Length: 319
Ligand SMILES: [Zn+2]
Image 1: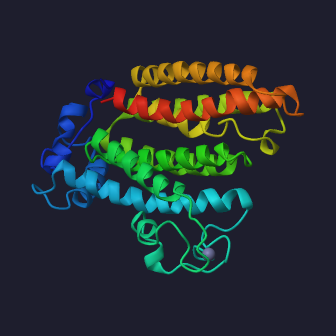
Image 2: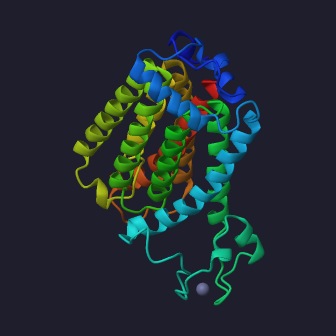
Image 3: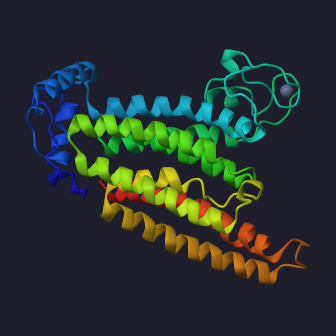
């Protein structure tokens, strides 16, 4: 269980059932402290209570899931363009082979891929199933986050963190330049939203935990970077993901973090040992430096996968 029950979280008693459901997670119900805070809370309350008494949790989860589909479509653009130093805003999405710009109906998440049979309409080039899978994966994670936070404001920063983590891990997994800038900017935006959400709910422990988590993530990144100053030119091993992951775990608290870290550690060791066994049974080693080979084949993928598993496991452990 999260320690939120002891955090003195304050939720206006007149909130919609969605917000009132937070009582089960966050404890104390009552007005926010201070006149200025009350005014701000009233404004935020008005924005949140879209349809007082009529918005069930499943509707919030549905909205988050649809948002996840659209964000997942955007992440596909980010993962393709950021490592290639291309703009993520222009031009519009295009086929990487024939360069034809896609129409709006060719950009509908998942549905377009199915309707086009997984091929470009012009040149018939195969479109990787990774695209709809990323969209579905992002939608699933956003839905889980909305369910976990019962439609509270914390859903927003955690969705931003999830999208940042997802994008960074996918770029790292592609043996491309480690996206430190993406990790840092995504984490900064998410942290700003976390400050707003936790301040409104009065979740000071979550706020402090998030900042401590980011500091630890940055420290771990700096320590790994100091051991390998050229890391931007080497296939990523998940270093950049430590920054948003730190904020994610720090905000959830100690117990969920331990669950997430424990699950990731067990999985990472298992996959690493499997990688060692596969390396021993394989034919002649490639003529690459031993250190890089170990990093890319034994440590890289397991660490990347484990970071993602730690995030999802901690989220479930926090419920
Ligand atoms: Zn094409």
